[in-house]
Structures are given as structure tokens and as C-alpha cells.
Image 1 (cartoon, helix red, strand yellow):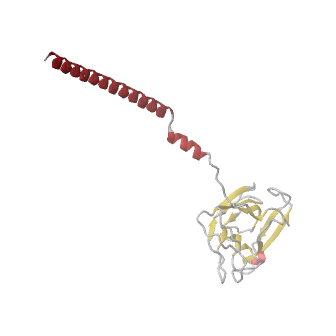
Image 2 (cartoon, rainbow, N blue to C red; image 1 turned 90 degrees about the vertical axis):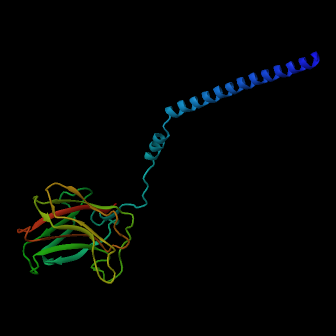
Image 3 (cartoon, one colour; image 1 turned 90 degrees about the horizontal axis):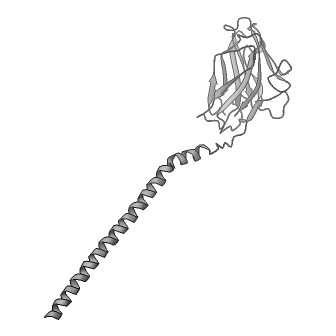
Length: 236
């Protein structure tokens, strides 16, 4: 009887000790887990991953495969494209000097354009297209693929100031081989100082452009005619 009682007490004591040990181990593991989670939370507070990503992406360079495509950079330059051959309206009233030394914006020459008030053809307006090839009004192939360009920039000034160009534009030729799109700005009031202008080409289809550049105006807004200058015309 005494032996059986002793054995029973021994078993109970073992169960108690096991329970205490189990509870203590659980608390220790819980404390360890809580400490780890706190450390992770502190680390996350110190580093804002979204800011780090934004900072990284903001430094990514913008790469464009389109290289500047000059319409005119200097008289007789081999880099020039298109030819000022598309005279319109009172075409006899237009005189163009593509190698003028009269105060170019850059380089040694610029384009000088004189538009008289003679109204020789009775149209009362005039303009010129830069074409490829010369005198191509869309009746033959020859346009350039300018896909990737986002703008056409050029510099212009008037001889006196106040000269008014109704429109500067890109494309717009029709015919059997028409330009793929058209864009322009105007009217533009020139100053005696060189000023840069820009035609926005974003979203335009530039896969085929024969009319690379154009200006047009009329005698009503230039009753005495006008003289103006162009330089550094290019697609970018």
C-alpha cells in the first residue's frame, strides 16, 4: 500500500514538473518571437522601400533612338535635308538666299527670305515648302521616315520686327504619295532678335514626310511685304 502511494506521488510530481517546464518554454519562445518582430518593425521604419524604389526609378535615363535630323544647319551643309523648292501663291514675289551672311543665329550662314508686295500672280498670299525630292507635291516617292521625333525646332527673326507669318508647318502634302500627317503653329509675330520656335510632333505619324518644313503668309498682314530670316531648322 505504501509502495503504491509513493509511486502515485512520484508520477504526480513528474507531471507537475513537466507542466512547469512546458509553460516556461512557451513563454521564452513567445518572448523571443516578440523581440524578433519588434526588430523587424524598427528596421522597416528606418527604410521606406517605396521611397527607395522611386529614387531609383527617377535616376533611370530616358533613352531615345532618334537622332537630330537637320532640315537646315548651314548653307551648303551636307547634313541638310529637304529643298526649299515648293513656291506657292504669289511665287514670283519670293526671293530666297539659303546662304546669307546677314547675322546668322549660328554657323556662318542663315536663310534670308524676301516677300514683296507686288502680288504678281494675284493670289495675295505666298509660301514655300521644303520638299524631298525638289518640287515633289506628293506625286512621287521621296519622303523620310521621321518616326521617333517629338518636335521640330527652328530659329527665326524679322528684319525690322513685327513681320507676321501666318503658319509654320510640317507635312500636309497630298497626292499619290501623301504625307502621313501634318502639324503646325501660327500666326507668329517675329522680333528683330533671334527666337526659337517649336512645332509639337508628339502623337503624330511621321513615317512618311515629303514636306519637311513650310511657311506661309499674306499681303493683308504684311502690306509692305517683309524680310525675315530662318536658321537651325531640325527634327528632334
